[in-house]
Image (cartoon, rainbow, N blue to C red; front, side, top):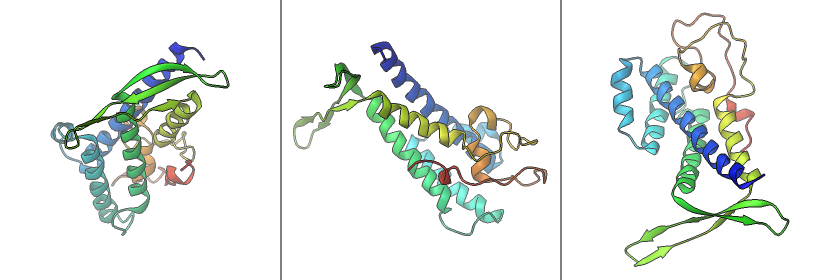
Amino acid sequence: MNYDALHTQLGRFVLKFQTVEAAMVELTVQIVNADSEYVATLVAELEFNAKARALDVIYTRHAQIFGLSEKIPHAEFHKLMVRIQKLATRRNDLVHSFYNLLITADGEEALARTPTRLRPSDGVREQEGEDILPDKLEAEIAEMGLILNPPNLSQSTPCKPYANAASHGAWVWAEIGPPPGAPDSCPATQSPLQSSPE
């Protein structure tokens, strides 16, 4: 791997995360089942963790109404939102950092990440570094891929419950199940959490 490839990998992480966020917005629009512009406008004004918390509550309500689950919050979906929020923290750490290139003791090319955080109340600037090896970042990118395209989701389903499910990730279908009025041929699926690494 060369340094350009390391930089490309960082970009792939950020773009994959943006796809997860777009899928969350699409899922919110579909569950709320109102004018999509109204919902998308409201969601656009929320910071990421607020979007995740709101979707967690909205989905729990959806699951209760349509008999998917009586649990509050919906256990599997809540786990998914927690995973995504951890990835959001990681994304913020990666984006708001400075980078240097390094060679490990084993001769592997990597990135040295240095975030800068201010703690004004203590009058200090905090800098905790991290060496990012390509395999570690690739595993995090793969985790987002599993969220978007769960391996246990049938890719050959004849129905398309949501117009943008394919472009925003199959997990929209996998997580919320068939919407009201969906054809009976649409299969129920397991949560991607059952197949994904924790």
